[in-house]
Length: 512
Image (cartoon, rainbow, N blue to C red):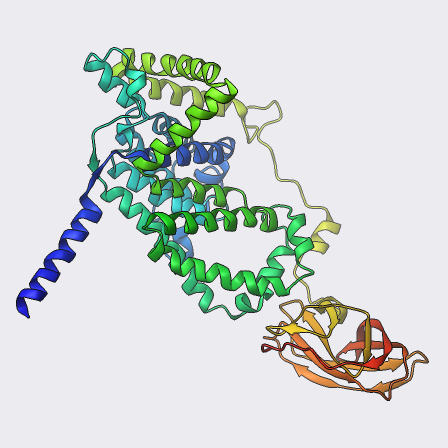
């Protein structure tokens, strides 16, 4: 028994050793290096002209540590130093993308990127910036510059290789553990997101997703607004998403599971773009997915690209353009050397400082002196100030849906005509936050006579309430109205048509 356990333990250690320390060409990390650096260069580059206001002592930084009581956790830099280091970060992102002094660039980007994101918790610190910071750290530990990089070209050039460009996609093999850590990081992030969703009841009822779709907090999302009128599909999407997030970490390691999990991930994040208005976060996830790239994938892609190039005759022009650009970059790097690398960065940072000072964002060198704060218009102030205005009852209602079928407590077939003998569901979807409410749902005939009254207390934690009505045969076919009242105030009224004929209820009630 002891020998069997020892052999089993030895086998597990061997498998773990093979999993983490097997040597491969770092195609995955190189692809992540190029993609994430390019993306963050664009995202962070947009904020360069606001460095003085967002990150320096001359502006109004909002350090994340202050939210937790750790004041002055990181130093707030003077404006000139903030501009210099922010510009250096952008330059290092570019050199990391092209793979010039890759490890130094990755280390510099990690520290500077993390610092600036922590100094602006209002806009720069986001989920995707936190993920990107971890990615830059793992890139600095990896051999991501050993393939598809200027460093690789310079190494081949020093070895006297006649055609170094043709060997940029070939490299020695290195231990794969940094790539494994990045792959595990992705799966653990998804697993943590799933655990968070498990503790969020409105997620499973679709209420949370529906209100996200109705907002433009990120960007305009007309597709999401159109989907919000079909709340039942959110329940299906909610369960599919959480199952995928849980299984991702466990199924992504074999070829079939990898394509299925990554394919679902691409679909999921693409949907967040068109429904929630998210743009940067999905592309960060797509960039990190490249960590699952293998040598077999590169060979397969190279063969497919070659076939397409021969078929459509577009490889010649692309290759000549790429070689021209690459030649300029690599030959310049070869001539400059390590001292030239530092000199180029220093000169460009100094130019950035001069350019930023010439912008004079505070008007310090203007003829009239520094800009002064202008008094806010009184009408705007009155509109913005906190007051004791009571929320109108009708503003607490999002929608009133009437249907015959309900799935997971959501009315799914909103209609206006029903036959006698039908069990109806009248659902009031409320806008949180709201106080405790007394909801009434009363049935009126075409003459305005109240035929039936029903009322319930809806507490402040409820986002919807569903009334059940049975259209008995005693109701004469014709027009009727359901009137919804909140705290004795009418907030909605809907007309239905009762048709003759009795049919059995087909209600599918899976819980409210």
